[in-house]
Amino acid sequence: MSPKQAIEAGLAEYIRKEGSIGVVLNALGVGSVAGCSAVSAGACAVLAIGAAASVNQLYGDVQQVITGKEAKSALVQALVAFGYNETDASRYQDYVDTGVLVISVAVVGGQQVYRIASRGNIPGLGQVKNVEFNPTTGQVTNFSTNRATTQYADGSFSVSDWTGYPASVPRPPVGTVYRLLSGTEYAEARKLANSANAQLRRQGGVPVGYEIHEIVPVKYGGSPTDPANKVYLPRATHRSEMTPWWNRLQMDLKR
Image (cartoon, rainbow, N blue to C red; front, side):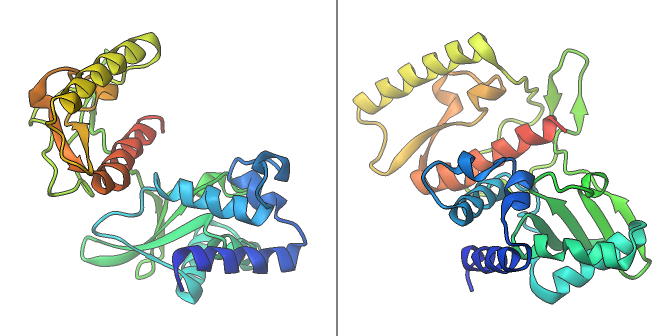
């Protein structure tokens, strides 16, 4: 069963039990069926979960997302250890089936742990977002997914955790200091980058099926025009690997 099929099956079961999908939609920030435009509520939830997955922190190289009975059991054990009674903890199992709660396995200090993260704002679970549960010790802690390990007073920062960054793509130079651009400053920088990239395409320098990627993204203060800051990537790599990686970092910075 594909992830999409698993989510659809979980949503169908949720609707069967609850008679409505409203709570799931609210948890995902959709708000209501009306917010889904022309698509059905179920299809809307599937799309919202899929979009959230692209920025979810748990799809790294050292973690494996799990589903089914093992995931549900890990969730209940973690919530009980966190202070919920078993009956209340069990009520949240449907969020695993629908893909709103993501359970993954990681190895920390040589021991297997379960990590629980929410793709939405689930009523009653706000305090346990990003929870790590060690079934050996029974310990429950909150874990951080923030990749920006050093932040400076002027709002700039450095990055040292490159987990999940594609090995085939050049990384920014060691020691790079980043600064998120916004508003008019970012719009002007992006305009310069688009103009420079268009010139490269007109010159025939970009292979068919490839896109131009700024090694230090313009959004992060990278040069919009310096050829040394540009690399050609296969379209699939650029859109499904690089853009989501930098989007995850931006979300980390907002935590």
